[in-house]
Structures are given as structure tokens and as C-alpha cells.
Amino acid sequence: MPGSKARSPSAEAIILAGGAGERMGGDKQYLPLAGRPMVERTVEAFASSGLFSKIILALGPENLARYGAGWAAAGVKTVAAGTTRTGSLKNAFALVSPGAGLVAVHDGARPFAGAALIRACLERAAEAGAAVPAVPLKDTVKTVSADGKFFERTPPRAGLMAVQTPQCYKRSVLADIVAAAADKDYSDESQVLEGLGIRAAVVLSDYRNIKVTTPEDLVIAEAFMKDEKTTSTRIKIPVARAGFGYDIHRMVEGRPLILGGVKIEHAKGLLGHSDGDVVLHSICDALLGSISAGEIGVYFPPTDLTIMGISSAEIAAKTIEILASKKARIVNIDATILAEEPKLKPHYEAIRDSVARIFKLDKGDVSIKAKSREGLGDIGHGEAMVCYAVVSVIK
Image 1 (spheres, rainbow, N blue to C red):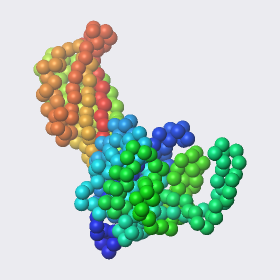
Image 2 (cartoon, rainbow, N blue to C red):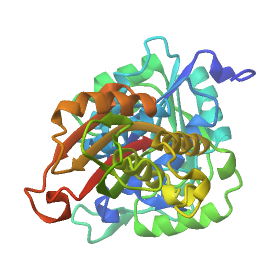
Image 3 (cartoon, rainbow, N blue to C red):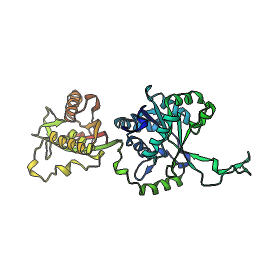
Image 4 (cartoon, helix red, strand yellow):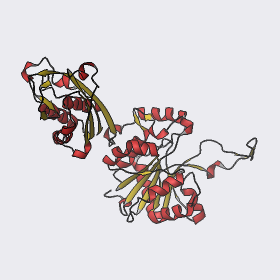
């Protein structure tokens, strides 16, 4: 952050996105907001600000397993959320660098924090030790009786504000908060400051910086997104995607049998416009499907006589080129061949080596296996061969 007071000392961000979202009927952090997961937009606001050397995202166990690889590819550190907000903060704080000067703590379901607000909170925290964004209350507030049946009094509204995030702290102050919180849960970290005798500086925020907690909030957030002018300039966080592919070819005499780019000695080979490599064809279709780019017949139509007999390695090279144009990276490949003959187990390792080389992967990221049809159908009679493929990519 050249020219910013908050850049020295360095700043890191914690985004808490482990809540269950009972009021939303599901995991609110991954609810779609204008077509993309809400937490992705929240992280983008911090990543694109240029104010942080590290972003730490606390996710529930299911989301961590499902999306952790995608966040890692985007350079975002992830950690398992705790059973409470304070527990999630403790887990995330353990990843904060010892040398970090400032730490921002933000709600994953609060996607509209702008760079100017974030910067202001960091700068005030650098001066005061702690800074909290807030907005004046617009409604009259009343206290109610213990049984919730009667209003008791009306506090002066002028002395009340609605607190938001990001709440920013010197690292040492946040360390004291984490230690003082013990096993208790708090709705936000600044509550603990009062017991520590530390006053947080007020940073005037705006009413757009809402936390999406109810279905009505989501409607409001969608309305805000219609006016969003900076979405196209923000950093898109890569996510994991899956693809499925299938191919079948007849087995005939007089054709070479090529599987995964490996020539296997056998009396029959696979009939096709190309070399008939069902393994590479199914993998390529799965990869194209993972990025919604069609299938290999779109790029290599069987009506094109100029590519008769083309090597499937060339089809794979084109597929890799298409993935690169979409900024997609292959994570792993899993292929299952259905064939009655020949026995393919002796060829597993050679095919894995070849597929890994063709798709520029480590061999450990490629799985090849085969099954028979126990003499049933065309495959069982040795008249056809099938391959199924499942792939995962980061895009």
C-alpha cells in the first residue's frame, strides 16, 4: 500500500465464514449473489484492495473440503472454523504472521466493504490500537423486559451506533482479545475490548455495508449489486470444478489398439475417425465439460476428412490450449476402461505415465483402471470398448 499509513506495519485479514445460516435455510456464505458465491465477493473486496499481505478464510468443514483447493490456488489461506465465532477467530488468528502489525477481522456475509472503508479502519487502528466501523441508528431503540413482553425505556439514540466490520486491531491487541475471550462466545471482538480497558476508535461507515443474515437482506444485496460498478475489475477467486467424459469405439481387426497414447499389442484395435483412443477422448471431453467448452467433436468433427487418422495426442494438445485460454488448471484425472480383452492391468502404469506426460501432470494425479463386462453385451463379446473419465480443474 504505497502512500498508505496502514502499509507500515503490514496488514493481514481474517474473514470468518463458518456460520451455519439457519435463518437463510442454508449456508449463507455460499448463497449466490448476482450469480457468484457471496463469500467470493467478500474475499475479492479485500484481495483487490491491495492492503493485505495475507488473507485467512475460516470455513466450515464441508466448505473447507469442497472449496479449500480453489482458495489455496488463489493464494488465500484457509482454516477450519470453530463451533462459535470466537472459536473461528482463534483458529484463524493462529495463522496470522508473527510480524504482522495490523489485523482486520471481517464477516464473510458482509460483501460490500469498500477499499476506502477498509483503509480508514486500518489507519485508525494503527493510531488507536483498535478501530470499528459503525453507522448512526436510524430507528428509535428501546429496551425490553426480561420476559420480552413490555418496553421499559428509550435510550438516547444520539449516543448509539450500529457496529459493522471490518474491525481492525494492532496484532498485539487482537492477541489480547483472543486470550481474554477464553471459551466464551462474542458477537464481535470489540466486545472484549471493554473488559481490557481499551477504547476502539470510531470509523464512520455507510448503510450499504450490510451483513446478509435474512432472506430480506439478500434481496437488498441483489439490489446493491445492480449498481455495483467495480465488479468487473475485481479479482475472481478460482474455484474447483468437475467434468465427466465418456467414449465408446468398436473393436475391429486390422487397427492398432492405442489407449492413453500407448500402443498395446492385440489382434483388434479401435475403429474411429482418429486413432480411436477412448481414454484420451473421454478425458478430453471431461476437461472440456469442466469449463463448459463443449466436446471434442466441436473442434474435430468426424466430417472433416483432413483430420482422418489424427493422433488423439493432438486432440489432447488442443484441449490443453482451450483450458489455458480459460485460465483453468487440471488437478487430477480418473479414468475407468470397460473392456473384455485384452487384460489391461499389466498396462496400467504405462498408460498412467503417458497420460501424465500428455496433460503435463504428476503421475500421482492420474488414475487408470479397467473393468470387464463379464461376457455381457458388445463389450463383453469383445466388439467394443468404453472409457469413463472424471476430472477436476481449478478455474
